[in-house]
Amino acid sequence: MLERVCDPSGLDCHWVIRPNQSLSWRGAVRIYTAIATCCLGIGVLFAFYGYWPVLPFAGLEVLLLGIAFYRCLLRSQLREVITVSAEVVSVEKGRHQPQEHWECPRVWARVALQQAPIAWYPRRLTVAFQGRQVEIGQFLNEEERGVLAEELQQMIRTTPWHKHAG
Image 1 (cartoon, rainbow, N blue to C red):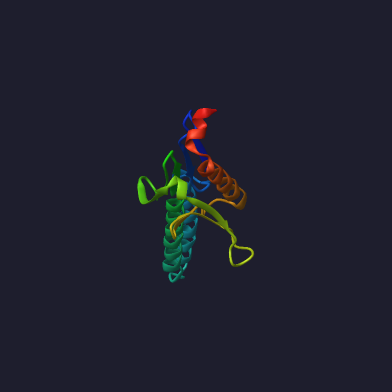
Image 2: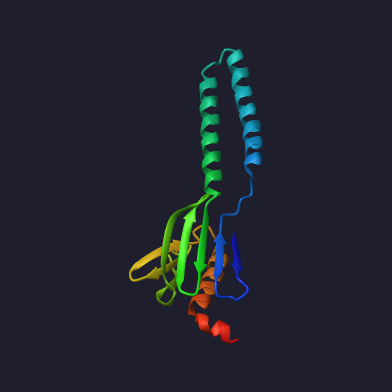
């Protein structure tokens, strides 16, 4: 999901990138509880009829499903914030607060949308400066990645002092 916020002067823009989250934490807990209840209920029923080895496998299945739900929901909370100001391009990545920070002078920043070495892999969107680069928008679809690349290139190429003249 891609959201752009610019100040009224148009000098500073922020892009907030986050994965599409189709399931809330509350919804995930409800679904997990329903599946776990069914699975463990069947396991207990089999154990009641003497097939007790089914129960540990049902418990393991419920545990692994819970871990998978948790990891997917954690990943859905990732955020990337790209800021293009009058002088600096910065990228911050993290969940609730920035855990990674990268920045470079705006005039030297280069945005590249690189074709993947394997045809069906998604293209890579990077911002680079003096041999260092950071990949952005990994969880965007191809269309959103292309739109972001175009918007960033246009914003970086636009000289800040031209904005005041118009």
